[in-house]
Length: 432
Ligand code: GLU
Image (cartoon, rainbow, N blue to C red; front, side):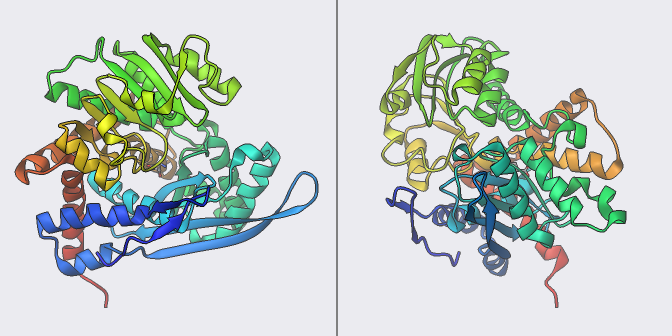
């Protein structure tokens, strides 16, 4: 891969390792092992388009603030660009490049007809009113203009964005279209509210996909989820849904960490009650049937499963030695850095890698997109069944690649994705 691991400045000004550099290391390892064709390797090692927009927004008190937004389109050989929009102070071109590239692998591994993209705005929505977040979203959508589109590049929710934000993106995009094209544009975003053409099951889809993956792992390892223990980092959409759905199998949530702190209860935390607490308090801190613990102690808790469902680079050379679990199921994108990967392998901790583990979100986004195109509404049961089948099949392919190449699961997941992309490139050839 031609990208070099440069260093970017984090929000606190501390240098952080380049996330795109991590993607390069993961990619190189898999490409070497499978003997990926050199020209395809070069093509996939770069993003196609990188759009950076600076735009003004009027705040509630009348003053105008400038914002920076990104949309990176990595590859569209399998279909339209697809991927979420993230609102976070840490959003940077380096991060969005990495996230967009992972979306390409995710589409390829799950056999859906989408390429990879990602975008976001560098700001913390918690510091702005709802009306301000709406205006920021609308101005960003307007600034992107035709760089997104229902058959071209389709955003979805990600960190700190949700169905309401997708509704504003949709409304803004549609309002800039000629009247006779407006009705044909509802699939410009997925993860919309159901009333606006969203899919049943999309809200919980990423967590549901994590749980379907864990069920596959449990089957393979003769492991019973009833009475099993798990800890979760991040209690947003992915962490909270995964927790609620795992609870239904009799598993016990021991501890949760988020930006506000970490909490533990050896007798188990009720995910539903924690969801209500977080809705009011803005985080897990202060939940009354658990004790506060330090972040260090959180990571060292003995449990069967650790589900990182927050941000990147959480499992590293520094933190991986502390983990006391059998399985890491990556709900987040990029929670383990390449050094963390080496340590997980050395310590015999199983891994369901992000591009497989959290693919439920984009899979159900594909179902939403299909329903919009066909003017259909599917029952929840149908969405869940289709999701379950698709995850089982992707999981089986990764397991098989791990065995046949005698490698770790992340590399195996890359090999499955790159094999599909290589085939398509070989069939299509290169213009001109
Ligand atoms: N943001 C989610 C992800 O990282 C979903 C993307 C989508 O549905 O397009 O996979």
